[in-house]
Length: 365
Image 1 (cartoon, rainbow, N blue to C red):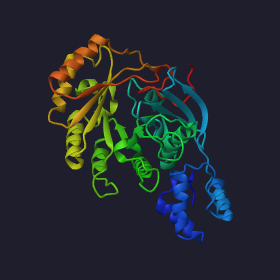
Image 2 (cartoon, helix red, strand yellow; image 1 turned 90 degrees about the vertical axis):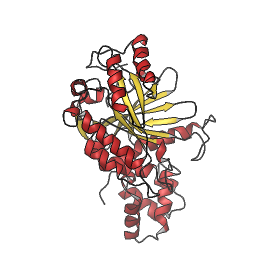
Image 3 (cartoon, helix red, strand yellow; image 1 turned 120 degrees about the vertical axis):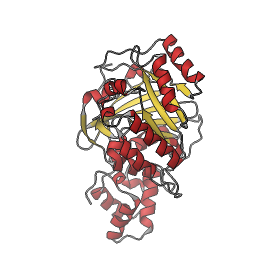
Image 4 (spheres, rainbow, N blue to C red; image 1 turned 120 degrees about the horizontal axis):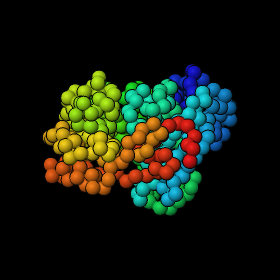
């Protein structure tokens, strides 16, 4: 079986491989637990496996983590950004964020991004390729190992051996997850497997600019219990009129706002899940009370929450974040219209680890 790593195997794939080697059925479960519960980074650590099997696994499925080419840590120590090199030499960035009771990994689903949003460093760099499910999963495993190894005692309590545990994963790094649908969904299932990594689906967020057919497809996916997936779907909106969104998010020319919001309503009706809408606030572009009012019109009757994100600087976009007064005027409209919102805490800006800043190359700072 040709695969980049064991993380590219589903559990049935692993079972089939080991049974084909003449191993008893329980071996697959042992290996799976070593990979996803104990976070083993070497086949020789799997001491309840026969030595001959460990050698064969090492020869056929190298247990190699992405190579860390560079690490940057914010001045407050709460945000870490790693530049990771994949097996073929391509590079991506992933971020670990520490909150009072959460440890969140922001991970990538593509090398680069084909969407081309004006204000996003990833889109400015262009698209290289999709990641495999294993390459997506490996980013979360990477940070989970780091947290466990640190051996801190602050909350939340550890659930995978000594040290801290990764509590949340957001698919908000490089790329458009729904344009890499199959691998993204496989990664979600792998990370939320109750017999494996054990991350609750409600602790996973998928961010999309709004690929309408795939939103409908995602609404039909099932969780292990048989009901709808319980992940949080976040829509990167950034404008409430087609004229403006066509400029900021070019995919809007294919899936306009009417089609997008119709898909959002179908998604909520099918899953019962609240949607999150991401809105990067850009001074003089989309931070006006008129845009806030248009947004409130769009969200009327939807079970939704708005995350407002003051623009983070990127190399090829000259826009600026809005003033406090402009943010206050924008949020006053949402508050008056009864739209729940949060102004997101800016994290890791000085190390280019904020929303829209990931590029997959070494930063100059």
